[in-house]
Image (cartoon, rainbow, N blue to C red; front, side, top):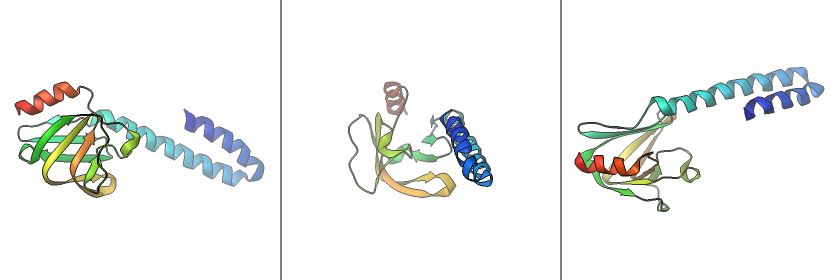
Length: 142
């Protein structure tokens, strides 16, 4: 909604200066709105899943990783700040802007695959789970 209001206001402001620039900005804003809507929609369509031999974590189309249970050292329910190093990542690409309530410690490094196939190595991953206690119980059973 904010993108729409901003687009209309900037369109009229820019139209005083240049009608071509106003329409270019409007087209870019509409394209951006479609992209944001697509990213938001993908969050609910690609859920986290616990498989037979692995844990599949997905953050819409922005990040995903499949972690074999044999690589998981421990699952910690915590909101504490993550240590700052290059092998500590969050499932959310927003990093510290989005809180986490689960921290997964790995025995060895794994790869988080992001948008456009960008890969990031990690051995500690913070993520937000809607039902963290139920998730922790299911991880102990597996």
